Amino acid sequence: MSLIVLEFFCLSVLSYSIRLLKTNDDWTNVLTDQVFSTNCTMTVDAMKREIYLQTAEGPMTLTEGGIIQDGTNIGPAPPRALICEASDTNAKSGSIAILDTATSTTYLYHGGEDQWSGFINKHCYAKLHNKGHFLWIGEVTAEATKLLSNKDQDAVPCQDGTPSNHYFRPLALQAILDTKPHVGRIINMDLDVWIPAEHWNDDIEKEFFAEPEDVITGQSSGPRLVSGACVGFKNSVVGKQVLAGWFKNRCGKKDQIALWNSLFQAFQREDPNFKFDAGKMSSYKTAMKYSIDVARQHWPDYEGKPSYRNGWTVEKPVHMGKTLLVHPNAKGSKALLYAIGGSHVCHASSKTPARVNADTGCAFEHVCEKPEQCQCA
Image (cartoon, rainbow, N blue to C red; front, side):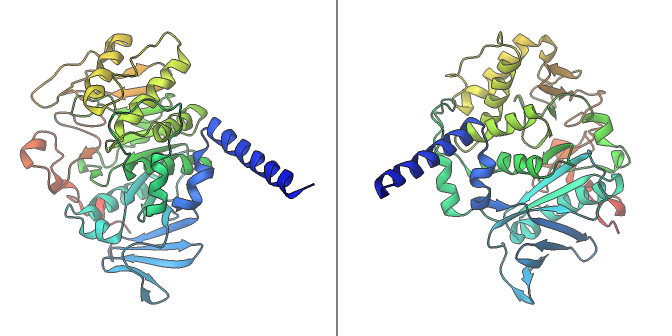
């Protein structure tokens, strides 16, 4: 075989492999090695405020002053971003797991919003209820960021420009489901999302995430279809398809628009009668209202209303086919998020004005109200 023929053969195989991967939306295998590693476990000392990692590069300790490896402070971020699974929460196989994300120890410990409290609150909750807990720690390299602009031609239209690094979040979530089959559902929670004392002993998996839908969330306070602050994806074909679409349809700085588009595509796969205008879903500004309008046309139960507390108030759970479940946020409802009194999960940081959460029980001063919320053994 001549060198020219051999070169053509190799290029053809490579081209076919890339097309096959893209056809299957299997971006995880393409990019994981360039962006992050899932070969990491962690244990946490809540009292010392330290996280102990076991990685392919050896043990590391996350501290307020930086990352310690072999007795040396190597800086605030590891050489490559890591997704580390807690090994000290005794998570039950098939249970939910929570993902926290931090670019560096500087952000985790000194991010200006007391991010550590949000992290340790969820870790202590996971230990109490035997749930999984993951931490992304690390920055995305410039080389990896360049890949964001290399979108598939069949991705949804986008008017909002270059995607932000936030779009590596769905890639990380999908990687966890792909590589950790014991995780039944992965829940993305922002660092300023936490569990209040009022519901500390409640099992949010049993209360909110045990339904069969592939994507489950709580209605946010603002008029938007789904917020990325607290949303769970089932370890299923559809759950991973939605995550793949979230990354594939990346668009601009606001990563939620791609999630809405991915959900709309999932609705269409389930029911060809579901229709939407891709042009109106190409910009965050128009998609925020339009996505709600489309959803309530197909599912009248989603006919919410503004209130003095919430920009879009939903009175009862809304099942959008087999794909999406949105829990209510109205006063007196069994709410995952943003109820006027009684939210099971809070989304509030030290920068959130006290008046915003005065009647929800979610003022940030309550994140460590009880010692067990942030001082678990």
